[in-house]
Length: 362
Length: 76
Ligand code: SF4
Image (tube, rainbow over all chains, first blue to last red; front, side):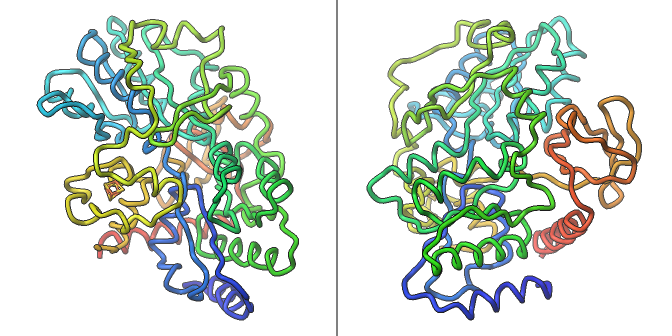
């Protein structure tokens, strides 16, 4: 650990905290940094670090994954998606393909990709074939998608969009009877795009201490220290502990491009339900690239229900910050990265997988 | 998915830049960086092939260090 990180740690240790403090993060990257650096074990015992709704793949609606599977199986389409989405299961009887991977094993043309550029290259190299890019992600990942569309994509490419905004999930928790946290570490790269200011409502309206953090131990510990001081002073505010990257107003060009291409809508979060103004659809000018318009994607009304995590999986509670991953009865028993049950053990940003990778085995 | 890494700009051609991080070179889109005047030697935070924001060099160094540490723990 660097000297700077040690200094932040000793400052935190010197604080006299009268009560237990719960600090939530809403970003898989934050959770990974915390778990890998073992920050939980280093902080005073009365500080709890809670992983929250920081995994876009985990909240990707079951019906969207189902639609992608059906599309890939029934149409002559190449389906492209960021890797971890391919392994997330939908709830189907045994024998039917429950994941995109399983559909691929049945002959569907499904490929993992790592960037919009790769998507474009594949679509351009195969002009005679239809391609569908299935994308779940937060603002950081949505901005590049919007850029790709704004720059122009070939006619044989369409988008199945499950993009989500981060702040409405935090607002949902804050507006609930039991938010369960006293402080928020706001996501650094979402804030890089959307601006630190986007998080000021947390402190101003809800009096919850808030600090934007980067992904180093130094930045995270600085953010913890900041929120703890805010709580001790009784004056919650928004602090920015990632100034090298995040501006108050964010990346305005990126915001303009998102605004030009996408429209904010209500959206369904798997296991959680519909959250107002938390998703995106393509604007009219880009609608011809909407996979939902181009293909008669199976849209099973039955699937528009909240709470459809796999049977026995407590991902919803994990995502809402109500339990730690290892409090799920399946954690490390019937659910491991090798044989995952729920999306939180599948996605690289799922708290269950991150904890497992960091060595929490039970 | 929001994992992003800082890269240094080696050259710029329109809205594309050749960038490097720890010896690895990549093409990076600068399409989201229309409000920033970037030049050779500057650092940008790169996510899924797109620069999402300019970075101070100090933060870039720190992040590389972090990735090195993560690599080591992954190897262990
Ligand atoms: S351990 Fe597995 S089953 Fe339990 S919440 Fe995590 S992903 Fe779901």
